Image (cartoon, rainbow over all chains, first blue to last red):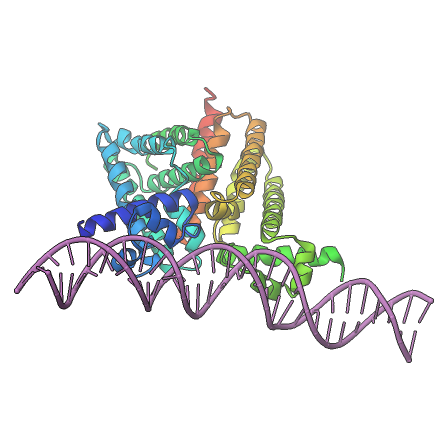
Amino acid sequence: MDISEARNRIVATADGLYNAKGIQAVGMDELRTAAGVSLKKLYQEFPSKSSIVMAVLERRHQSWTEGLDATVRQAADPRAKLLAIFDYLAGWFCQDSFRGCGFINSFAELGAVSPEVADYARKHKESFQEYVAGLASEAGAPPYLAPQLSILAEGAQTTAAIAGSPEAAGQARGAAEVLIDFALGRTA
Amino acid sequence: MDISEARNRIVATADGLYNAKGIQAVGMDELRTAAGVSLKKLYQEFPSKSSIVMAVLERRHQSWTEGLDATVRQAADPRAKLLAIFDYLAGWFCQDSFRGCGFINSFAELGAVSPEVADYARKHKESFQEYVAGLASEAGAPPYLAPQLSILAEGAQTTAAIAGSPEAAGQARGAAEVLIDFALGRTA
DNA sequence: GCAGAGAGAGAACGATCGTTCTCTACTTCG
DNA sequence: CGAAGTAGAGAACGATCGTTCTCTCTCTGC
């Protein structure tokens, strides 16, 4: 068995379990069993649970960034690219495993106790805002549009998670259309 | 010492501690010390930690509802009332103790494990959405406006919490103005 | 003054968690 | 074939948490 293959399986399993039950609710033994590795191997790959948490956050960031960018790239014009953000959210919300943004959740759970987790969540959100800002800039929108759309996307995630229904994506998309058209129409 | 006075002090102290450190990070002994009551009294007032958590959620709901309504009532016309939501958020975000919406945080921490907490968070958000819907209806807006503003408010809360800066309130308010004016302008 | 109920302080208990240690068995190389 | 290094399974350990129990002190009613 390849070493990095075990790492990947551990992180992927931890991602699923942490998402489904919360980080603190999943013990190392449960993770060990689900991932099918020995405790020894687990601690050989990762020195502590917090390092697994950080690896899961990195995985989530990469997965989110790649998935979002893949959806956005399919859109034709800059306006459609901005709206594609909310199409990506819609697809995500419809997954059975969706239980809210993993960064918001980990921040809520551990942000006050672990500065590492809080920093990573902040960086992830900053990276998303910069991505939106890039798309908005390509569309020729004034700089105030990107934070507006970012906030809309954040709100859709928490609303969909707590309400347990994916309709927030469409509602946010409708609001985004109005905001984009306003920003592109009169760029005051 | 009045019985209900001890209850109030316990819940108020728990609210502060849970908000600052997360629910799972605060033990009964820390709460007991901070509230200045004996363990015996604590378990005399509340049968378990989860009942304290539910009491804290009720307190948060009441505090949020009253504070929001007090701010909204000061606004003159229906449009200003809708915007006052974001003024209330701005004042909240500027408090040192602000660490995100307590319902989003408790949902992230315990929602997957405790159906009670998940239900209460959902009900709180529903109640907020209905409140916004009432204001939007008074303003004569079409029904799609209220979910848009609710999502905006949710997004502002998580953005401000993770970024650690209150500017999301103003950004969301700007977006709300555009959405409100659009919805009132052509109520298609 | 005294018996008894009640409150406070904190020890104690059982469970769980993260982490480490031990023991066994298998593989691999000479 | 034999020895040695390695990996797996799980016991063990220390810490912590929610909860209960015990012991002591105080305050009240007769």
